[in-house]
Length: 164
Image 1 (cartoon, rainbow, N blue to C red):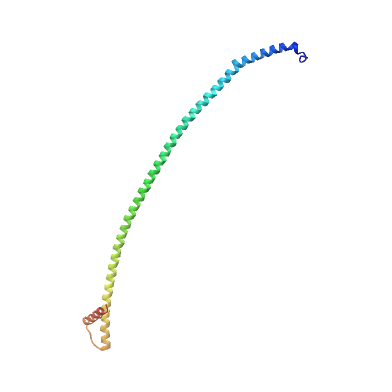
Image 2 (cartoon, helix red, strand yellow):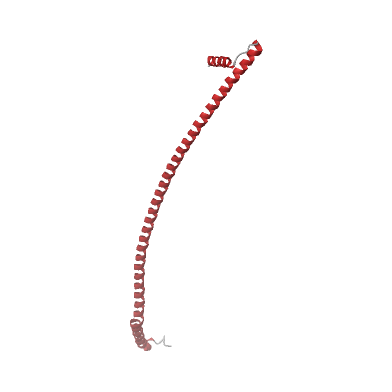
């Protein structure tokens, strides 16, 4: 067995170990390591490019966000101004309509008061006229006196003024 015979095979084993090591070293040095280095450089370059692109996109997104926020703020300010202006317009219109309604109603109230005063005066005139007729009829029936219309009117007016 070769494991037992250490002295006879030991130098040849060292030789083949050295030859195998050198061959593997050369294969690694000239074939494998350059490919691995190239792949690592490509990955590093790609990652750096991606990071630069991400940074540029982030700056662009921040600029777009700032524009959006400015547009929103401007829109809100315009909306507030429109709301304020509309409120003022509606308030002014309501005030004008309120004043017009107040004037129209006060005109109607004056007309109604005039009609009521006219109706009251007509009613009072009718009452005085009726009172004069009643007084004339009562004097004729109770006292048997014939009173003319003018005298009856004067008596009713005197009685009315005395009470007022």
